[in-house]
Amino acid sequence: MPVPLYQRIAEDLLQKIRSGAFGVGSVLPAEMLLMEHYGASRNTIRGALKQLQDMGLVSRRRNRGTVVENPPAMGAFTQSLSTLEDLVSLARTATRTIESSTEQVLDIATARELGCAAGSRWLHIAMTRREGGAPTTLGWTDAFVDLHYAGIERLAAQHPDQLLCDLIESTYGRRIVSVDQKVYACAISGPLAQQLDVADPSPGLKVTRQYRDPGRALVLVTRSFYPGDRYVLATTLVRHG
Image 1 (tube, rainbow, N blue to C red):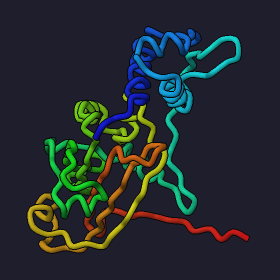
Image 2: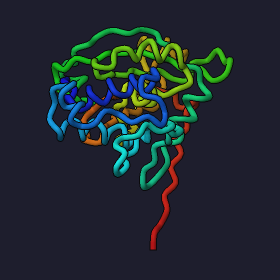
Image 3: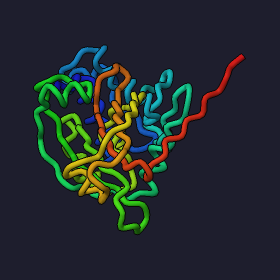
Image 4: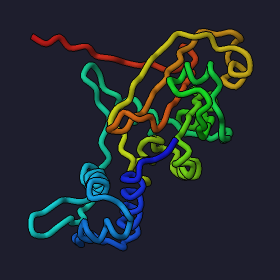
């Protein structure tokens, strides 16, 4: 799926900040110069700068322009009824192993399951996780990544303790601001049961997560399977008033 021009400009500026071309405390070129350099409108340039500002990488200062700042620590996702800190906790405590990676065109059934468009092309990364040095596989995850971020496969292998969405944000500047999560009871059978070393069939959980940017566009979709006794998803409901 096409990436907006403002996003591509934000990624280019981000890479220049990361490389030191624009150091902390330096001032980015004025909007007019950026418009000329990228062949973009003022609104497009401002959209790119807002993307960097929302990430805490730059600040807009009167009479100074756009100043490069020290990057803040990555935040955790939260939602009104519960916390998604379990995502971060799982990434830090369970080792990720990439089993395979291929470009995939989604058929109608898979697209409907993931909430994507049928016929759309994604980078499909199949992964397993093991907790600590345990030989037992904790779960299996199929991650479908926007092809614009195909380089994430290498980064995921280099940083097995970081979430894919965090790697996309820190490397490409594409902000993930919400995660839509659904949890289903399922039967684990066939090759998946063999991969997870459980009886065929066995009860399990299927968790799908849609990672969205500020415009609600899908950047990443994951589909995870866990044997029933290997994963707990805790939710706290709070009564207001």
